[in-house]
Amino acid sequence: MGMKTKKVLLYLKALALTVVVGLAVYAQAPTKNSDQPAAQEGIKYHTGFIPPEEILPHLGRKPRPDLIQAEDLPARWDWREQGCVTPVKNQGACGSCYAFAAIGNFESAIMIRGGIAYDLSENNVKECIWHDPSCGGGSPGEVAGYLGGAGTVLEVDDPYIDADVECADSVPYQHALLDWRKISQGIVPVPAILKQYIYEYGPVQSGLCAGEPAVPDWRDEFADYDGSYTLYYPSDDCFLNHGVLIVGWDDDLEHAGGTGGWIVKNSWGTEWGGPCGFGYRGGYFTIAYGSAQMASYSSFIQDWKELDPGEKVFLYDEAYPMGGCGFDDVTAWGMCAFEHTRACSLSRVEFWTRDITTDIDIYIYDDFDGTTLSNLLTSKLDAAYTEAGYHSVALDSLVRVEAGDDFYAVVKITDESYGYPFRLDWQGPVEIGKTFISPNGEPGTWIDMGDDPPDRTPGDVAIRVRAIVDLTPPEPPQPVPSYYSLSYAYPNPFNSHTTIPYSLENPARVDLSVYNLLGQKVKTLVSGSKPAGEHMISWDGTDSKGEPVSSGIYLYRLRAGDYTNSRKMLLLK
Image (cartoon, rainbow, N blue to C red):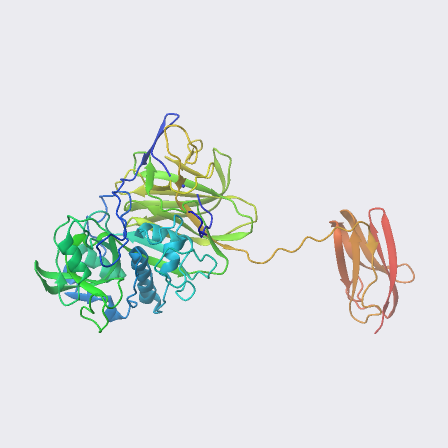
């Protein structure tokens, strides 16, 4: 984190291989990639895409049956023609393409659903992610985690600077990412699959090999591309290093390998590339299907929301959770214990998945004694997702939790085929006694993932809770009187209502009544136990039957414990 200010909400972390008292807990470590510099010597333009350090080969191999099938898709589709792509920007001398691809995706998602064109800040993304990727390159997943936890910022509030600068964490945040989904991991999906997603959901973020010194011909061709033709590079002999946004396709594009290719938005300014079939501004390129590993690590933003005043996310996975754990079974349970100092209303539970899921059940409990959960506050059952990624489930109604009252978010995940359902963050600071997993959610089976036994790397289960915090400032504590007293009524004289103040040094049984000058009780105003402090009661000039009394002098008498006092008041009509 260095000397930078980081946007932190409520965070915590991850894991490797575990055996705990006869119960096997397996944690899958990510596969480490070779170093991939974001801006390499000899490359004319900067890149910055770093594939996640994990391999999930089961992702992206089959089409979604509920999406439109390839034979029903048009031969050409371009989201620019639908008015749902924001202008090309320029990342400059900084390896921040990952931020531009993600923010471009978010801007398009807002335009598709909301019809409003926002200019959102890439600078806030590149500088405020927990481990500060800045110009050193990043991945779509860590951007999704940040946008889910913190949110988007307007460009005008945090303008782009193509250098490593401070995080602006005091600017207003606008939108929260609720659902980000992976189409493929380290494979290139067939064009029919990717087309289905683009047509149904909008532009798609993607990795790309933009060239490197080991393949100078392709490096130079891509760097000098002018938009006048469709790029073709069928080899996979160079690594992924650039993040871009696929906005459409055209099956009739001609290239050296045949026909058909993607229409792609880059982040190298409008002087690079060309308009590629729409408008007159440059910054786009077309590339043959299957070329340069285009569409590897493809993903998209499926849902978002505008942030509410006082909205906060409770979480422990401040760094992108790259590890995973489970019990060598498609089902596992996870739990996070959250503390808070102000009253709030819980609205959503959010989490990461690593496979297609067939069933997800969510519970929020009020108590956990280290063995057993109790006092269920709410539940939401039977969610399921057709893609791995980051998801948010809205509770059926807001769940109110008072200040200082801890709560426990529990998620049961059942994958389609994978044995490590939960994501773990082992990069950020690890909490002890805050995140747990269990094979079945039963009492006595919860394993503290922050514990640090010699046979396991500790980490935090990636479950989050979204809430609206009560922004009303608490009433300042009232000083407790050091004596009993009965004060003068006001106004006095009065003709309709008067107020009678009194003070109690200690809690006491109180009787405050009104009498006429003959000593007859007219009305009882207070009868019962009252706490210590300042009090007041009003009298409207009526008797115990609610009938108006005549003008004249009346007495009001206070009895509180051993204290007794009385005063006069004058009713005028």
